[in-house]
Image 1 (cartoon, rainbow, N blue to C red):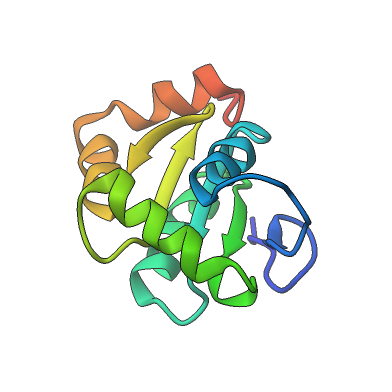
Image 2 (image 1 turned 90 degrees about the vertical axis):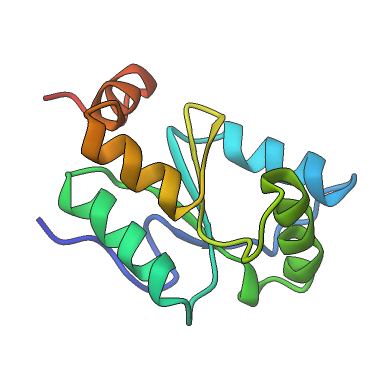
Length: 125
């Protein structure tokens, strides 16, 4: 199975107009799909996390913050939310924050990622 790339399918430029603060926008976007990744298109760790989910058969919705005019504000809000830098990649599953690369990989290794994905309806097997 191949994961889609580009501006179609699951990769979304976050240029939709929404009111509210960056954190409210993040929460709204994160709750709209089973798996949401906030990313920067040039980030190698973002690429790795996208490949992980696509390799598992999950079709995440990806918001490329560097393609959004308000992406820097969202990136700052994600840093505050995580309490860490860098702010990307950040993964939400079922509208709930999973975390950055370290938390996602730890969940994958300890076996808790697949049940989260199934519970969110992102995986059926």
